[in-house]
Image 1 (cartoon, rainbow, N blue to C red):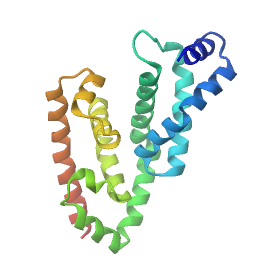
Image 2: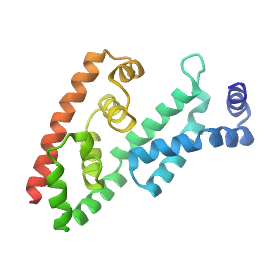
Image 3: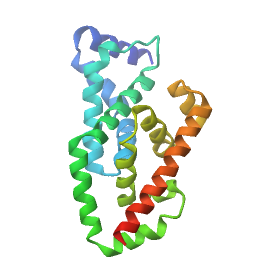
Length: 195
């Protein structure tokens, strides 16, 4: 922990490359796993991991150890990077291309339709459903995206999300279940259109 704070101070004061390398090395695997859970694609996860560390270095001068631990701050940077990606034109184009390919495959559509009646969290197993869910979540406000991503992709409890976002737990639950209901109907509508 002492080393970490020393690296951060050196980066903030002198833009020290060696300290930046050490800090990145310390958190690389953890951020890659986080990115992979969001992207479900090795290449996209590698790109997102790189983007997370670029944003970390660009914003580290604003990091204040009095407000949050570095790890907590870094996860916030990572969440913001993911939210930005899922709102981007690049994601929209990739999603449309992938969904078009999947629609052309009747076996994929049939398999997806068979699982749509299961719980939404179980439905995330297949990539095509995952892509639809990501696209739906990206339509919501940043706060709701955080709630959904923390719960679906990071397995946070409602209490942990409440603490992280400084919201009442009842608000977190209400927003989560509202979005889950909408996601279920969107997924059902999506696969019924394709059947």
